[in-house]
Every structure is written in structure tokens, then in C-alpha cells.
Amino acid sequence: MASGLLFLLLLGIGGNMFSEALLPVCFPGLCPICPRGWTDYNGYCYQFVNQELAWADAEIFCNKHKAHLTSIKNTDQYNFIRNLIVKGAGFNQKSWVGGTNAVRNDLWMWTDGTLFTFKNWGPSEPNNQGGNEHCMDINLREQDYVNDEECIQELSFVCIKPVKRTKIIKNTT
Image (cartoon, rainbow, N blue to C red; front, side, top):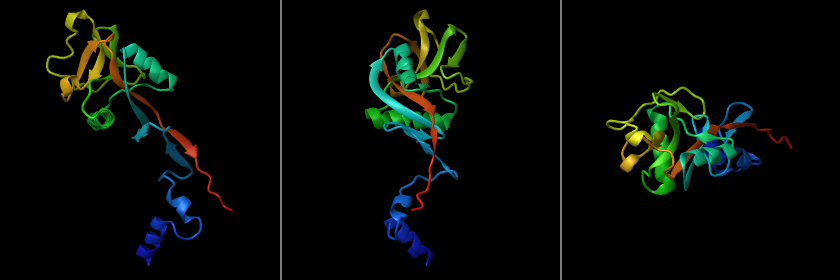
């Protein structure tokens, strides 16, 4: 009986079941919603932008969408971001993320103000080569690490913003 009910639910047979079956799974009364073109992951919306901009211009672009260049907190999020880039670009394209040491050379920070703890730097990085590398990119030479880079270089980038929680009101008619 239960499997038959599940089958009917999946098919959407039986009154309003079809529209309810399409609703996202969410906490009672609140559903996470990301805008079209953004991807939900762990309570945040991400967007890979395959347009090449200097680091500051990429941050401004994200800000115009109520977002920041992405911070990276842990390996799972890092892998998600890399996969998002592959999905958008077709390969591990070198892209901006929100790390910078422009304020103080020995202090890396995220543009969203969160604590800088993820440090999957490449070999001998950060090296501030030439004294001008103050912005963080990901996928240097398609490798699995982050790198410091000159902020004027134009790269694709990833934006992040908190997921919007929208109240879902069930239609009782």
C-alpha cells in the first residue's frame, strides 16, 4: 500500500498532489530559494561567471547581485566550487575567489568578512611573486590548489550569497 501511494505521489495522480510533489524539500514553512542561474549548496547560493574581469571588478559584479566572491571554508566546499567551475566552463578553469591580502601582506582575508581558515595553497604559495600578487585564484594550471595572483589579471569567478528562505504557503482551496 505504501509503495503504491509513493508511486501515485511521484506520478502526481490524485488532486493537488502533482503541484505538491514538485515543491522542494524544506524546513517547516521555509524553503531555500536561489535565483535562476545560481546553485544551492549548504545554505548558500553560488554562481560561476564565465566572464573575465579583474579581481576588484569581479567583486563589484558579485556585489551588484548582493553577493561576494566566494570564500572557502573546507575541502567539501572547495570541491563543490571546483565542480561548479567544471560544469560552467567544461574544465578546471582558473577563476577568482574572494581571498585577498591587499590590506596587509601577511594577512589573508575573505571579502565576505568570514574567517580565513582554508589554506590549500599550491607548492611554494602564496609567494607574492614580483611583489604584486594580492588576490586568490583557484585551479592554476588546472591543478587542485589555490594561488596568489596579480589582481589586475582578468579571470572568470565564483560569487556566493546566503540562500533566501521563502515561506511556502500551502494552497487549501
